[in-house]
Length: 501
Ligand code: FAD
Ligand code: NAI
Image 1: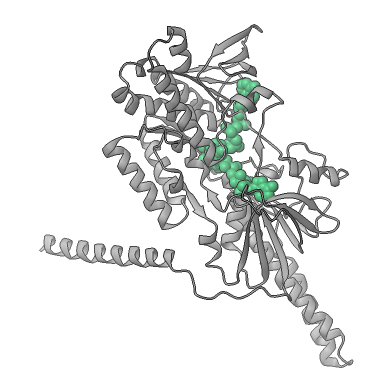
Image 2 (image 1 turned 90 degrees about the vertical axis):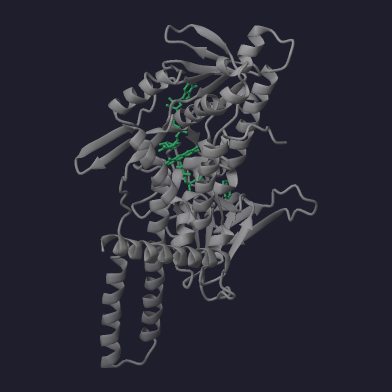
């Protein structure tokens, strides 16, 4: 009957699921015994970075055609969209990182991975200098290597507008270590506020968490803090949790300028319900150990005491990028980032350098989505370039042969093939797959372009879509399993409150 059939389908379904899961787990743990060695006859492609852009490229490039060298100060890829969840321990840091070696060990040809920081790119001599910044005894110091092609994907750094106090007293939210510092500071503030013999003002100061910057990073960070207070601190710190305040400061007239107006209003409404104070038209001027100085909409300078200041006021070009711009200053005239042509080739060094992601200034926004698409696009470009090289090499060889009707025919065939292959170098085109942000209490907002209209939604269902979308975008089965287990752990046991040292 019906139940018998349903049982059968369920049984086979579960079996197929288990077999597939087993296969993926085995595969994730067993890289191939052998890879092709470095081949001196191939061109060397140096990739700077192991973030969104670089990782997309490393993952999709065909290493048959190139010797690939990756240089990055971190030997892992960080899944930034879920980084705000690490600040309060909803997720563990390691759940959202993917070791770059777990990717390169599966490539056809060996990839050299150097955990180091590039300190100079010289487009004239086509070399990169890098430094081993590990503080271990016996650091290898500075090394210079040549490249045929360079992919510049070093991202951006936090913009501080020259405010000294920000670097000294503020916390950022860009690297994994930043999220862990926030987590520690948050717990330190709560523990310190729970100590005896402190003034009421001091307790209020310690329990005031201020986030500067109403872009998606600032909005997600303040949302996570509030969730933590409501779900966990209220249970374990009943004496002080009610006094915690979260404030989001934004210089512009509204938060989330890149989202639709109705979603901005919806977020403001949710924040109000969740008691996150939003101060728009407030420009932060200075930061010290215990407070932040802002200019309010009337122009008055106000001092706001705070126990923790998170600086999410946007990004700017890294010093390495500025140096490269300086070397190519006739072509590189945009302070926002590196200028590139339609194929993402660096203006001024079109023959050998490509720039992608946050380091490049294009019409597309500086997001993970863009960097990822650009990285995958470049893999296609390198495939075409290798094909062009092969056809050109054949042409040269054919031209050296003694004259004959066959030779003439072969040359014109190869010339046509070369034209066709060159035509595959199509310009990069960004496909906007929508923007999402987490806004607290398991709700999220989503802006989705659909043809010429913009669909937007916000609430709990969108929250569910947010978590499943990002979960499915995670790199590999290990991260997906870890994130799912972290979420389950938090549901069962709540978030951890130890300030680990
Ligand atoms: P990155 O991913 O930053 O990678 C740069 C790489 O270069 C890193 O590996 C870095 O270590 C390395 N590097 C740095 N200096 C050097 C050097 N001197 N030499 C060699 N390597 C170097 N975008 C979205 O689309 N959706 C989101 O939900 C989203 N959420 C975010 C949440 C947070 C908290 C943050 C901070 C960002 C978020 N973003 C999101 C933005 C997104 O992370 C960036 O746009 C994206 O990382 C840019 O990719 P990239 O490859 O250019 O740079
Ligand atoms: P941002 O540049 O988007 O926002 C920074 C905000 O800080 C701006 O609104 C700016 O007006 C404000 N600000 C700057 N200086 C200030 C001051 N002194 N006082 C008060 N306010 C000040 O930066 P964010 O949020 O880090 O995002 C960077 C990029 O990463 C964006 O492209 C964003 O779309 C992307 N991103 C996307 C996410 C998502 O889709 N969920 C999440 C996080 C980042």
